[in-house]
Image 1 (cartoon, one colour):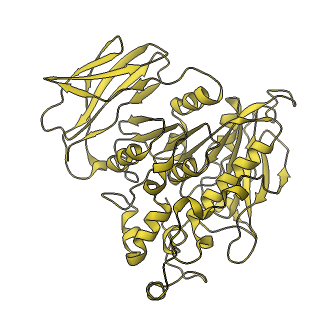
Image 2: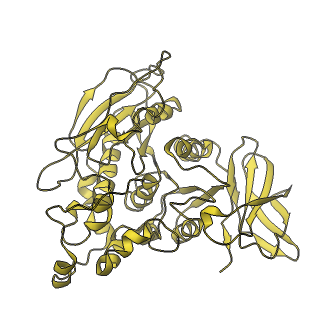
Image 3: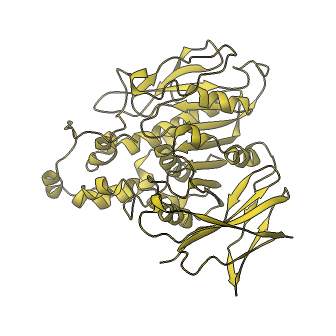
Length: 421
């Protein structure tokens, strides 16, 4: 996460100016010209050498000028693992705060059999891919900001001023507006490539990329699956580390929530979505995560891992991300589906369905209070019967709990998180 310093930029109204200006009421989804964004943007290749290619494509206008967005692209064909006339499903990869386009992420998905595009959402470009002796991109090669270069015609940076302070007036200087538009344009570009199967595409993002995935999955109905990792809505509540920045907006606070908090858009999400997070994530607390899950009206699943680390590599590591997307884009066996846990005397029962037999199940709970990021979790083994998991009730002082089931592929999903008021 990058915390930007306070800066002044032309086009950002002051609080006093906002008080004297009429507030422009715009429905969240209407901020984006989706008819335009769903057309493939102009693009030009920067390099088609090596397994991972690089390109620039047209973005949204910013600060009175046209913009370009940098992206990496890879597929089984660019890796030499498939013929030039083969076709593949596609995936759009959205980096988190402080991140950029990651060559190794596109390489990972190309190895999985996908055409993958990963764009930079900070108006910059990373260094050219660096490979090891086996031709594999070196991990974390672009993790440091000093490995990136600002594009001469780039869009907004990804600091707090662009993410929050710019709200009000013309939305063309708002980072969330540009982030969503750039992702939808990348999706349109990906679908225009002859090697991509246009009706088999998905999106996944990490941290702020998970936040953006929530927004994108709510406005771009062409995706077949979406996986936000860490990111969620209700950033204006509870222990969210973003809450202070939102509260500082004062009278513009509601404008930002209505326009860009995922809670305002996920109510229209009907793309099948898998929420992936950890129990102790400091950036996206578990109660906000569950609330975000609850407002989604379409198909949804959840994977909560006890003490999951927060980073880009940790965010693209869970195998369930690929399995979930595979089930929609490659007709592979789906993840198990959990029912709602019910309490029966001293037991908790939960129904489930699974195309692959389960190997284990457990109840995870915490009795701690205080910051959710600091709470200690405990576990109880559960019994697996035909389509039902049974486990002892947690202690009466347990305030948060859920059930996890793992199939014989070691793929884990969880129930909804049960939280005492």
